[in-house]
Length: 206
Length: 299
Image (cartoon, rainbow over all chains, first blue to last red; front, side):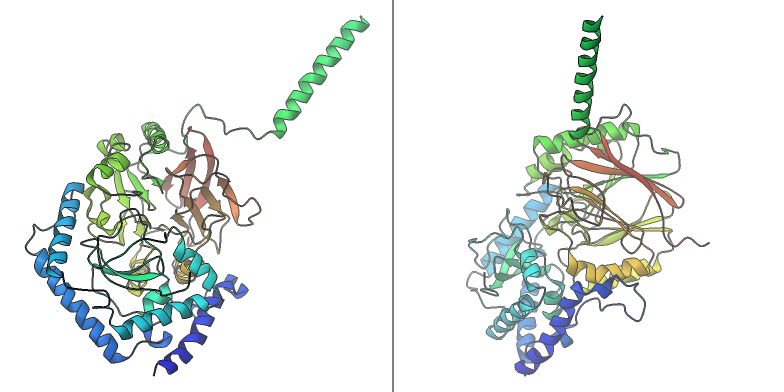
């Protein structure tokens, strides 16, 4: 199954990324030649269904926990002051970290998902536009940052831009959870609590 | 008599050589007597564009002071930000030092900020009241005057849902002007980051199809206005606080105007089918100006 996915995904990725350098892109855009907005998961290759199911189940479990704990705090308005945002964020992080005290790396990114994510990122970065994508991904993305599950996302580390192809191929996340890169690690970020939920190490060579 | 003629000739020669030397030496932009002229008419949409500014240092404060000075002459009511609203930590005191204090006079004067987020911005900024994002990472809004709709995108995380949303918003908008703004530039001649080819691949077809005329971005810490690309003018306004001096590629064929020797922000005014703009440096010099006629006018 995974070999089939790779066989389908690689040519599509090559095409998707090489189109960026195609002089024909300067031609007027019409309904006929309008490019695909992004590759869909089904065309770029996807992990085994059971792996995705398990990943999604664990993500849902996390979200339920987060919502339950968030419900014990004062609701954060979308017209908040910096103090309210900061207080809420840190309080939520503390509650989540306490509730997940035994959680370790890989508890949400189950092994099959880790393998898929590592393979996906490597494939995308090996395409013709790989060097440019990697440069963009590593732009202001510092190395040597220590990461641990339940840690606060480091305040001084800018958010790495996520390649659209990578996002489209990974399972869709609920609101307030995002995939991001810190160095070559793909992290699952809780944007509400500013918390690292889980991460996949070594998704690409530095 | 002959001696007088010789002295006169020498004086003329010296004056000419000084003039020639000045003509060859790049001069700093001249600070104008009046900060803005533009049409500056009642009923127009007046807005400012600022990017990559939340540093909290003297340079940002100088820029903010210049913005206030400009605003006193040209009462823009809206300020859109193209991201990197706060660099580094985002503690409550950072929101004050990097945003509320420098722009206090504008905020107190009723200027409404509509922010978009950059790669340095925590997602929680969407809940920060003065940024008016309503808790959303991407959103659109109708301008307070003229037939204009703005689209604030989140370009560091281009999930398919956002792109689908953006296309629907563009399609549903009946406004004459559709103005998207977001952090990463689709076209940029700066060396630090440059054009985001991947994002361009995704967004440009929509911008072309739905008659977008101008796009504002930041990320590169310079000012650049491109020559129209597929009839669309792209502005990089990423020197609102940060500056990458000398970062623009002088050989770039897409640049209509660039400015990378000091910080700059942009002010614009829309009346009907035309947008007039001035780009103002930290010292108050107008480093670029022009008028853009929107696309899609029925003839």
